[in-house]
Image 1 (cartoon, rainbow, N blue to C red):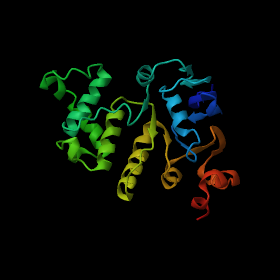
Image 2 (image 1 turned 30 degrees about the vertical axis):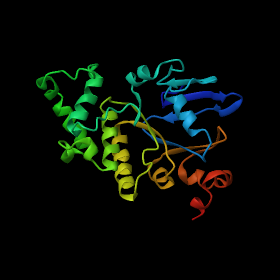
Image 3 (image 1 turned 90 degrees about the vertical axis):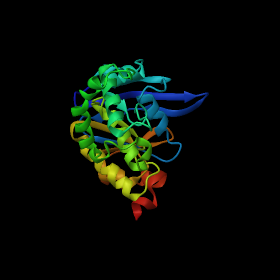
Length: 252
């Protein structure tokens, strides 16, 4: 496996009672890039993502992260190695402030995430890093706001911030703009662009505008197999991709 690629799958396959949801997928995610996984409904995106993040066990095939075979490694152990799934391993508590949520998330990195009885002095020591994270994601002005009182897009931003507290090298985003209006989509798209500077990002995303704006490489799945792969400009001109998924969205 080349050091250029932080994540690689070989013949990744998942069957459910005879139905092949993911079929022989060979995926390679290059370090320092934003890589999008797209496809029509039922293409196998979610199943593939769940295999990569260890929430499902493959029927066949192998998964490699930073050159090591992680096929049999548990999700929590994978996260400790720096591969983290956002909006799944977040630690957002609705009746705590934004700053308090970030401090709890930082405790996860220290292995003390359940020490809610820790002294205020101990938690205060995490403040510098917490404020730096809030600055990075544009939430510094919300530091004293209860999470439950935040607009939807800002809540998703907070969830991403709690994930960044784990210092991921590879960040996996599962439909990060799902359910958002135009303003929130623009906010989260800009945030993803910002936080990708020091990280690799793999995302499943339906919004083609977001995909075309952010992604260096796009992998298109159809019926569990890779239909096409490459930059958006190349993939969007592929007749098979147009027919299978993009259609009028590309033609327009």
